Length: 451
Image 1 (cartoon, rainbow, N blue to C red):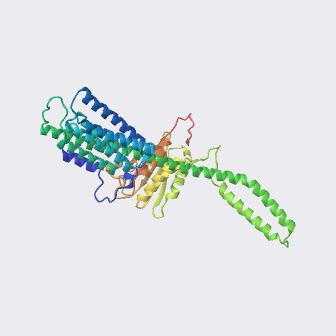
Image 2: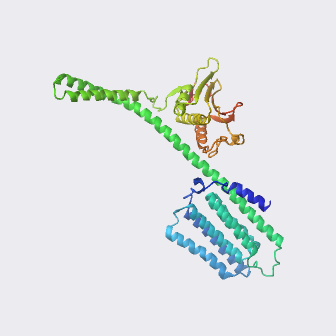
Image 3: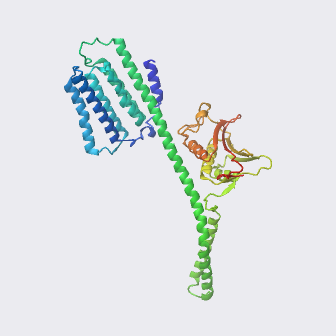
């Protein structure tokens, strides 16, 4: 492993691409990921370890140390911790910049201790990787790059300038080639830790953000469905009182006669009652709860039409194909928001990339129900086919501005209903998404499907 190879890996995995402009918001929007208390506790652990090691080496092993400067460096960390605890109590959540500064100080303080006690020949020099590891797990990409650069600078300084390693007898100087090897190994380790710990932590953050977005989308669909059921129930309950008001208004109009000064008011009251009845009739046509469940059951093709309706585009034709086996009736499915939102997202995505036509084919037999969404667009990039469904992954060739979060949400929602989702490209061009539900045992009542 050479320095050039390590630098190339670091550039590809951490540095922004050239011409990318300012840092993307997702790189720096990590404020509040860690509390001050956590960093204070980590620093107290480091202080106790440093003091115990210095005391043991200097007073027990009787190795000569510049004890004054060493204790001063440790005391500076003690003072900083006490000030932080007094000002904020440790409960404050740190911004990304502040957390980077705290870890940068820890790195500089440890560098000073190593400078006073032998530099890279000190066996504890590997501890310089500790702040780097913590930073790579919690900081933004930009801060990790800066912290890694600081780490490499500290390692270089310790390799070139340092006090001799404390020892009872004269210690032969470290061979230049060996010293270079120690510096290189620590530098490469710092780079790889920065790259891989950051990527693992960033992946976890992506999935956490994507799952939160999934929950928001599902909650929205559930609220909309609940509102529809509530509207239908309200229309039913308000029908009787409005009928009574209409009868009373009609009787008042008959008793007052057309010449009464209040005849116009009574007529207005009757017209408004009729208007209310029309509104309630419209609300009553909304899906009504079935046995207390806010989601009614309907044929799978009707569910597809419902999911596709908001996403159709005038210049793109929409084709729905049905392929049932023999005399097996069309499956009936609960109007679940997970299915509507998931299928709707795939259909919307197909419309965005299609040239002329989007086709949705539904097939069923005794073993499974399969819904296939196809378009005649550019299709998925071949090198991304195995990764489609991951959050923040742009999945289409020659298109920009799509981060893949919608596909992740759709897949997550559909898999929650027991479906499997696969992605491929059509032979003649265009993308294909296959959503498949396996049939349940005939003797078991399925909450989602009725066959």
